[in-house]
Image (tube, rainbow, N blue to C red; front, top):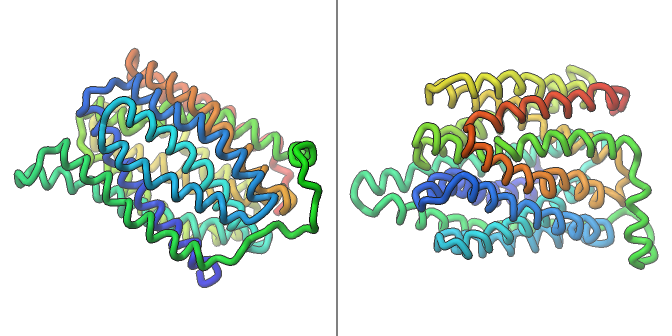
Length: 391
């Protein structure tokens, strides 16, 4: 933990803000009267912008200090919360675009920093540790979704105003994240001076290993499926079960908290099974039948339990995916690798959210059922073509 303390604290504070947003944002938009279609378009617009930000961040990280994209991402996030609190259509779209910029820079830079701070043999441990602390912060923010509900119950403020106040709470914590980040020494790529022309920068993409492109294809299919339904799941619960930020925060908070606690033991599971690829497939596969099960119930408690278990299985393996992708990639190209692996969750993800929102207005269960099919194809590609990857 000592080697990754500053990274873990930074991730914890950033995750807190994301947790508040994830618990309050869906019921807030529903209360404002926005449709599922518009909800998907708002999310989709930000995700598409994130694609450009990720590519820029990947090049910046490979050509210099990987900490810079993280700083830019944190700075951009400071403006998102007050814009969302305004609640107007233009402010929500602006916030979505800024959210794309913020996440694209932050996550790409953060992924590269971790890969440079850890030895290749310890990547699964490093990613599991910092991810667990980010999730703990995320869980804390999610559980705070009950605050607007409690304030309304005791007549301190209306539910809508309570939501707006909540969007301002992550700002001081995001500012505090700059403190541990400043303690991280420069994390430049371990290589000599290179030619810094546009042609040389772009030509580096051709040097990425072939198996990374297979991983990209799998990630594209899974990412498109997740965007259609899972990225809109907060609105799904708000629409189907008429829940508030309190119930949503509890669902997501319990899921994230359990996942964080298990994630600390994830490296032990990898060592017991023997390979990262096998561990990844073993953990993620059960999520497919659980997605189908989610569409077959109309009971909120049952749906909550199914969703929590499904999300733990699917998201618990994210550090292993990062470790696998970085192991496949030479150290000086890891910024580019991280950015292109994020493209399916940005370019295709933006389209997927929009399509999923529209399909939800037609048939609320249809996006989830399509997602189950796409997950099966995506994980099948990894099982067939990447099983021979050695740790």
